[in-house]
Length: 222
Image 1: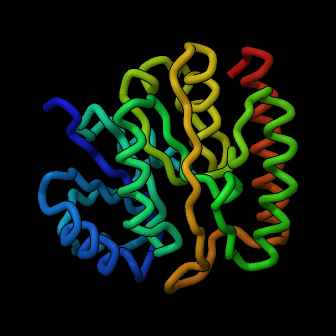
Image 2 (image 1 turned 90 degrees about the vertical axis):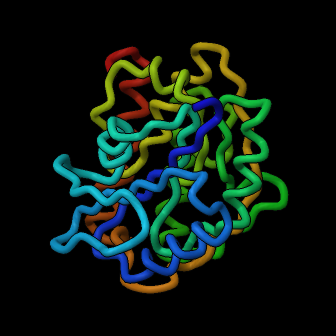
């Protein structure tokens, strides 16, 4: 179906996912395909297509769910309430004349209200990523975006290192002259549950994965 939207929401025991899906249904009705891909022990009972993740990592969750998506416009957002439905509406409006729209905390008008520890991780990673990839994108570590399927079809390696699935998507979009836009969003602390990334060994490991993947992409090895 032309311009049908498939929204992917990767989760791992997210207590807020039911509230989020209900809000999405109130806003978009049944016009949007919602796919919840769950890495946790129990599959949530929500008004969406729910599937269990077989791969490892948040980045791989997106590409695994993509195989079950029917839309030609694919969106991704967090399931913890840190991304708002109102901002999703802004991204979907912008995709009408773009190929990749990124929800940006650091574009003019955007806000990053995340906890202080994760702000440090994000600041370190985004500077290194922008330099290595040579992309004029302010929020390369965003997990909130809308993209046309044609862009995704240009990606050869869909085995993502770490959390950030946007790296190969943005790199493929730039390499193939697709139109990219950053839209300012307000990123808020999660509504419920505990963060999967903290400023500890796990946080440093994630930064390492991001820098490694950026370098491999730039060298044409990924």
